[in-house]
Image (cartoon, rainbow, N blue to C red):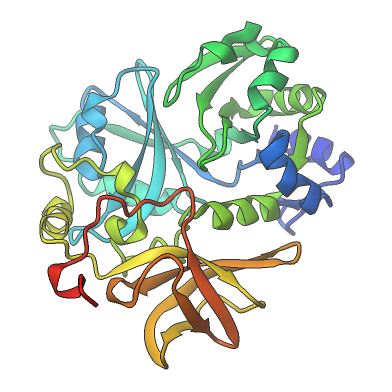
Length: 360
């Protein structure tokens, strides 16, 4: 059924990867990037993974597996949370949608098999938990922009159910007689909604939304937005070299939820202000590839993990040692000069520098 969606998208100018699993662009990257801020766009994220947890122990199980307070969630609520290993290092940033009988986990591309196997090893015989990979059975659409709510309500999508959707909530709605899950949030610090759409309904829902004048964009625009916003990505910012405090994902961590995998390490880092490096945005004066060393006074202080060009601007993400400095710091990265900048998605506000560095 997703093939029908792809054929429709290609007629609209979609440029796809060779295996047609990802839409790279609709040939409108500049317009799409700007419209994500001042208008509204739709991005097909169906290449992301979708896992489903079932069983009466599903909340407790996910609570013990990730950093946020999952036990507190009620049906209709959603939450970002981080999978970490036993030493508190990051595995993936995911969004959990809690329903009456399931938890849907929206996970990063190519991470569903890894996380499926990761969770499966922690299910004991008496646990009432089931895991399914339902990635191929659903499409994921994200609608982004300041005009998202207005546009959807003008089209009377879901009988104006959008206006009733509060932050960090989701609900099942009917679009053109098709039932879909729509959640408040875009995975970025930009307004909008994410839809989980059964594959046999994907073409109809996409067509309905784009007929409202919502501009389709490809993965290149998503990559521009995620770097500009500071969303970390697996194998770049989300690796087992870093923990979520260093990554700036403080909003996804509950410090009073009790035990979970990696909890002791994260709690100790918070208690003793032990964060040695932090993820920052970087404004660059020229193009430079990710993987380059960040230096200050000819000394290595970090690494550039992502970089991209947006029109005539070069930006990136980089981990930089805490004692080197923070926002506004000028650094050298390859042949480029960079300046550390704050990005909307990441927060270091709970972090207090260690006393030994305060006077430096």
